[in-house]
Image 1 (spheres, one colour):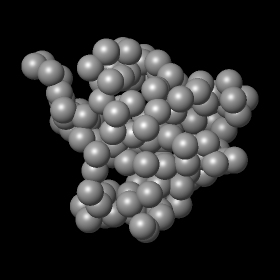
Image 2 (image 1 turned 180 degrees about the horizontal axis):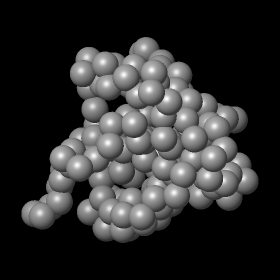
Image 3 (image 1 turned 90 degrees about the vertical axis):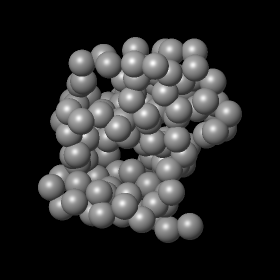
Length: 130
């Protein structure tokens, strides 16, 4: 398994990730396919320009775990990852046309902001498993 190390800054989103993760069919698929029941919310990370480019190059080669959409929703692709002290998580990348390629949405079984005392602007290292 290849590991990609990424760095980015925490930022507040619009709450769309929490709405998506709160959907029963999304929660069930993440639990089944990723091995944990996700906290209802995502941690948003804006990658540096170089890390953003590295990520998108790597994703072209990587196999994703797919979150199959219900009607009216976009496909979500998940990749296993971990943060700081080995907290298992997943990076969710929606197949939405208006989604910025320098943004990661991270789901975990816990509230990551609370666990790591994160505020907007904090830098975070992510181990991304390909």
